[in-house]
Length: 319
Image 1 (cartoon, rainbow, N blue to C red):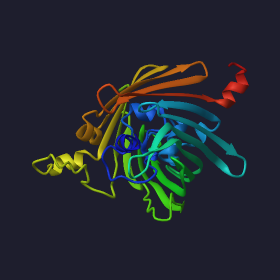
Image 2: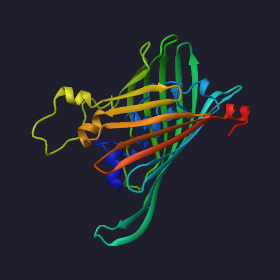
Image 3: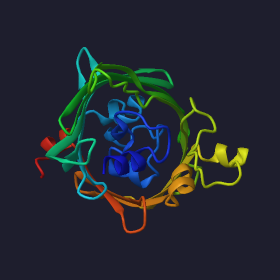
Image 4: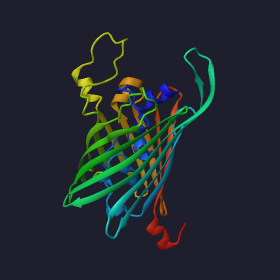
């Protein structure tokens, strides 16, 4: 089961420890293909991928979400942004992945009993604005428990974004999951981190009710895709380059309803399931986002996120 988790989370990239950090942390990201570091001031949950995307306009926004991943695996998330008088805007995030009960076996195949496994991420972030540029930094504590073996890590995300003052255009760069393993699973373990460098842009053409996003991932591993021994010929340079790109589109069909769609080229190449979709609906002071994608035939993954601006909530007194 854990091998299945790692395969779906990272598609077929180089396997690393803490691969759960590549699972989409919220429904909007799931619907947009699983990768986006450039959609500024839209969703407080983007703090998980690029803290620079959460500005003062999202102060007071709180969100909770749940992802039905694979089998009985579930992911719970929460995010909140608050502007303090002297510290500025701080971000707070929580993610917990519960893998349920797993059967353990020794090297001979003899059963060792049932174990519970989970991963937890705690995040605190800071953003700052300088003209048309915004910068963000996350500090993350990672706590992993896999069948009784425990590990902790201290990681950081650093991101920046150029936000056009007049046009609906954002260009961003993010360095994700840089840090160190504090305690490994065992003395002989040699855990590696899912470090990644990503670049992206989000824009909305004038007079068009559609926002487009393009995200380039795995910039530290250009051309690296799954080494399938069944392949009889090397993939072309174009195909290798294309697998680095994730595209997303948001169609604004109503002021309160947005249709979401995404395409992850790497997942399409490796799993044959690159498309994803969803919907975002605003209901009074609440925003509901539903995202869906599949990793194999009959294994749909659904994500649900609910968010609200707590300031407006308490001001209006409407629940």
